[in-house]
Image (tube, rainbow, N blue to C red; front, side):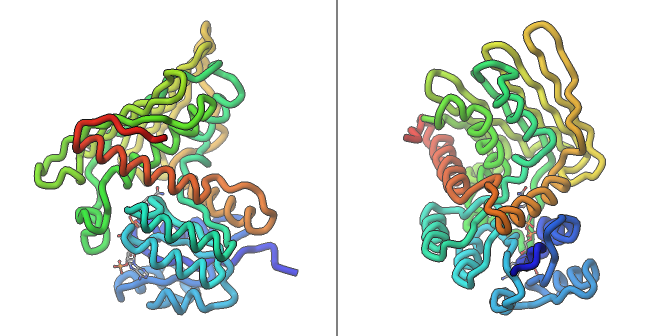
Amino acid sequence: MKDSTVRFGLIGFGAWGSHHARAITEASGAELAAISARSPESQAAARSAHPGVPVLADFQELLRREDIEAVSIAVPTHLHREITVAALQAGKAVLLEKPMAATLDDCQSILRAAESTGRLLALGFELRLSNLWGRVQKMIAEGAIGEPHYCLIELWRKPYRPGSGGWRYDLDRVGNWILEEPIHFFDLARWYLGGLGEPVAVTARAKARNPDQPGLADNFSALLDFPGGGYAVISQTLAAFEHHQVAKVTGSSGSLWASWSGAMDRTFTPTFSLKHHDGTTVREIDCGGPAGEVFELVREIECVARAIRTGSPLHATAHDGWWAVRMCLLAAESALHGEKKSLT
Ligand SMILES: NC(=O)c1ccc[n+]([C@@H]2O[C@H](COP(=O)([O-])OP(=O)(O)OC[C@H]3O[C@@H](n4cnc5c(N)ncnc54)[C@H](OP(=O)(O)O)[C@@H]3O)[C@@H](O)[C@H]2O)c1
């Protein structure tokens, strides 16, 4: 019989991978069995943060270890396909960071590997597990605003980090910047307004500081149409300061306003609030615990470990990952050519 604890290997110990490592050590039902880190610098950082955990230069060596059942993958986006397919073929369950990949061809290779191996594949949409952003969806599902009609998700923040070797500022390696953070907001909008059906079309606008690189758009907005006339607005600027995110959702009989602020995206001391209007009274909702991606990552590891052990549902599936990439690529095309794009 299997141990109740799932032994995780981590591939990629960069800005976000180091949080994965911490989250695996904090999550109940999970244990950090090994880390694969590429450069001597990131190997040294991994050893120093997690003494006693083996640190391997070659991710294939990690995948060969039979004591590892699940793998968390937090490497630059252009490497997602190669490493995820190898992990699935090695028989591991996988938690893959968003975006699934930067192209639909790469997504298809990953989906085929998941299907042919029958291994679990979860996508890193940790905001769904948030005490704040997840609570919004729970309240909508419970009928707190009636039928949802409209949603705005907006982020105001400082510029992105360059990432190891500057991959995040290189179109060939990042794909585009919609795949970085707006992908989370498309996922949330689809989830929040899911009662209306799948989104049917997108119209986007973007403005890059560098006109030669429209894919690296500092300012991005999109209008997402749902069946029956409901719609969502997604908007982000990276040309600002700090990190302030809101989700506002209105429905036939109420509204919700969630907001989150931190000096940085990865703070352990954010300020956040959720307000509900039921048509007559505004009420502050107690979210029951802290909100922010550093907390949500722990829940994500727990969710994946539970799914491996008990078959419980994942917060975000391979299909959700594929849908979100397709959405972002169509939004990028819409922004480039000024056309509405059908999603059906
Ligand atoms: N869900 C979320 O909210 C969220 C948040 C942030 C990032 N992400 C995603 O997570 C991924 C990583 O982002 P990041 O910000 O952590 O980037 P990063 O800081 O550049 O870290 C990437 C790490 O991958 C390592 N790496 C590259 N090739 C490797 C290999 N073959 N074996 C082992 N390690 C390898 C790099 O090693 P070296 O440093 O040694 O070169 C680097 O440490 C991206 O896909 C990003 O979109 C998701």
